[in-house]
Amino acid sequence: MHFAIGDFVLDLIQNSVEAGSSLIEVDIDEAMNGVYVCIADNGCGMSPDEIDRAFDPLKNSAVKHPGRKAGFGLPFIKQAVEQAYGSFKISSEKGKGTKVYFSFPKSSIDSPPLGDVSELFMNALNMVGASELILRRKRSSDGLSYEVKKSELVEAVGDLTSASSLSLVKQYLASQEE
Amino acid sequence: MAKMTLDQLRALRAQKQEELETRNVEGKDIQVIVGMGTCGIAAGAKQTFDAIVAAIEKHKLANKVVVRQTGCMGLCYVEPTVEVIMPDMPPVIYGKMTSDVAEELVVKHLVEHSLLDNHIFDKPAIDIVKR
Image 1 (cartoon, rainbow over the protein chains, first blue to last red):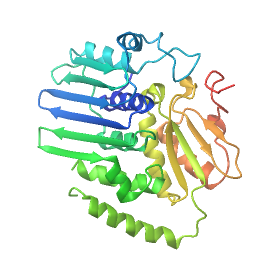
Image 2: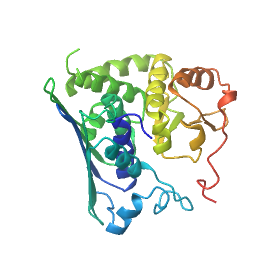
Image 3: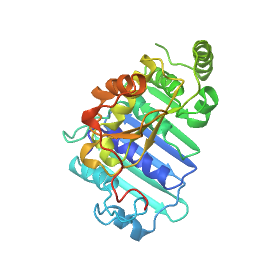
C-alpha cells in the first residue's frame, strides 16, 4: 500500500500515460476539510466491464504485461479511500478517456499525508508518453495556487529526461510551493 | 524564496548552460531508469528518483545523464529497482535502491565504474521480457 496521497496520484498518472493519452490534467486541492484530487485523461478509456476488472487486483486485463494479471493501482486507492471514509468516483468512456476523482477527509485518522507535491510533479513531468500534462495545485490554508504545463517547461528548459533539466525543474517546482 | 517565473527559469537554464559548456563532455551517454510501477512507488521509488537527480547534480554529471522512468520490471520483491546503461559497463538492474543508496549508485557506478555488489538483480523477470 502506498504511503502518501502523492504516491496514489503518480500511480494513476502512470496509468493515464500507459493509456496513450495526449492530454492529462491533474488537480490537487488541499482544502481546509481534506484533500481533493482529480485526474482526467483522453486516453483509450475503459468499457464498464474493463472498469470492473481494473478493480480486481488479480483479474486485470493484462495489457501491459501479457501473461501477468496482477494490477494494484486502482484497488489500492479505492481501499485507502474506503478506509478513511473519503470519496471515490471513476468515469470512463471507451476511446474517449478516463476521469478519476477521489478525496480524503482531514477528520479521518486513516487519511494518508499528502506528501511532497513538488517531488510528485517532477516525477510526473519526467514520464514519457503524454504530450501535454497540466498540473494544478491549490492550498486553502495560505491561498497557494499555481499551474504547471509540461509544454511550457519543455520550451523553457528542454527535454525533461535530462538530469540537468530535471534539477532546474525541481528548483522551479520547489519555488512554486513557497 | 519567491515563486520563480518561467522567464527566470529560462535565465537560470542559460546560466547553467554556460557553466556546463565550460566542462569537457561528450554528450548524454548514461541512462538511469527508475522502475515506477505500483510496486516501485510503494517502496519509495519517487524518493529514490529525487535523490538520484540530486546526486547527479552534486557530482556534476547532469549534462551526461538521462533519467527516465519505467513501469514494473517484474522484480517487485526488491523494489525500488534502477537500471543503469552506460558505455564500458554491462547494463545492470539494481534492486533495493532506496533513496539512501542513490549517492552510492552515482559515485560507484557512474563515476568509478564499479558495481554495487549487494544490489545486482541482473535483468527483468522472465514474464516481463518479450520472448
